[in-house]
Image (cartoon, rainbow, N blue to C red):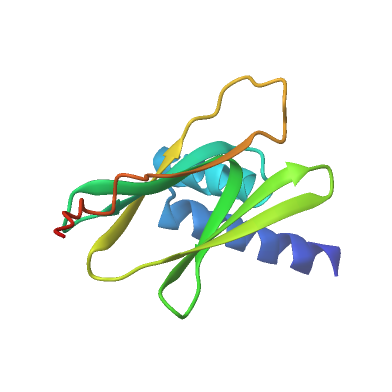
Length: 127
């Protein structure tokens, strides 16, 4: 029995090795796993592509995902057992970039959410 299990495991290892994962694939997988467990500090920047303005950015130990309603779901760890969830609606004029800004922080629950207040156009009022 042990020989059959060993043979199957060896065949699987050879198959996966033959299929080949590049070093970049392995690193990408590992970084994604770290983000799933809130171990990577990241910044999500959201732009309005029509006006070329930054709408907002979120910074902290976060994980991102997309749901089925064209929303970017950003989950941040803000305490030992405390989380915040933000939803960013994505449309034809909205785009986002995720940066890995990992570094050494003494605060493992670092979290910031900024909105660009210059998005609204100026309005001239006439009496």
